[in-house]
Structures are given as C-alpha cells and as structure tokens.
Image (cartoon, rainbow, N blue to C red):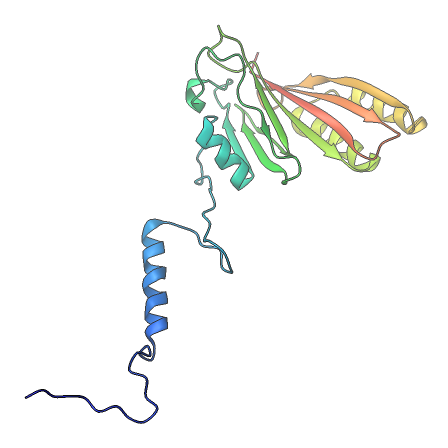
Length: 222
C-alpha cells in the first residue's frame, strides 16, 4: 500500500526548512575558516588580503612584491648590515631588484631593520640597486613626500634625530629655504649611521609646487 502525505492548504512542499539558510551560512563560515580565507562582506566575490606574518620579512620575488602591494607593508632585514639577494629571492646576477610603485593606491609602511636600529617611513615607491658581481644590494631607495614646507622640515629634523644625519647641514639648508621659500633646491645632506646603516636624505625642493620630495638612500654598513 502506498502512503501519500497530506499537504495542508497553502503549504509549499518545496520551500526550505526553517533555519536552513542559517545552517548553510554556518557551514560556509566553517569552511572558510579552515582554508584561511579572509572574506569581505557585501556584493561581489569574496577577496583574500595578503598579510605579512608577525616578525617575518618581505621577499622581492613576484609573490613577495604582490604581498607588499596588497598589504601596504614591507619589512626588510638588514640587521647583518646588508640585504642579501638570496634572502629575498632575487637572482644573484640581477643588477637591480624590483621597483615597487603604489602611487595612486596608497603608501607602504616600510621598515628596514638595521644592526642598531630601524629605518622607517611611509612611501609609494621603493627601488633596489645592486650589480652582477654583488651578492647584496648596494642601496635601497625610497621616496618621502609632503604637502607643506613645515611637514618637509619636520621630516628632515626627524632624520637628524633618528638616523644621525648631519644636524648643522640640515639646519643651514632649512634656514636658507625659509629666507626664500619660493626658491628651488636640490641638496644632499651628509649621511647618518645611527642605525648601523648609511642613511642619506636627498632633498628635492621646489617652492612653486605643493608637494616636496625627499629621496632616502639606505646603504649597507661601512
């Protein structure tokens, strides 16, 4: 004998069970947690954001550069006094490392760990110089920008305090510029070595423009 269930008036047998949507959402959440994905809520496809593990250092291969751009964080290990190509996954024969450029997308929080202190800054452009016969990079260069003279002077004085950049040279340049703020000047301040690395501030000042630039050159320990 076949038993046929009776349908109540107005009942839709195809309708989902109460709580079914909640169960499905919970299962999806558990699955994502197990795979380590970070989901951004809202319409569209879930996205995964690359992050640098605490205490880890960045690499300069394709994956490392993409991680730097995605996380807006770069951490380089020069605690030994040098940045070795092999340590950042760059070929030994490379003359240069990658140029990392995030202009228009936000600035990178850069940290260079030196033998006796850190070099830090917010930048949207980082470059790496070397040579075919070197196993390390001869220089890491990054760009600092400001939108006011006061902020520009503040960055220069910060470099004096933190990195040992020559104070007299810096203050003389600031005084000269304050007396003629509309002038234009390219000036390299004597390097400082307080972090165990050479840090040089190469000033690019143009009083007719709003944005001013400091090109920071970080070189291996002498």
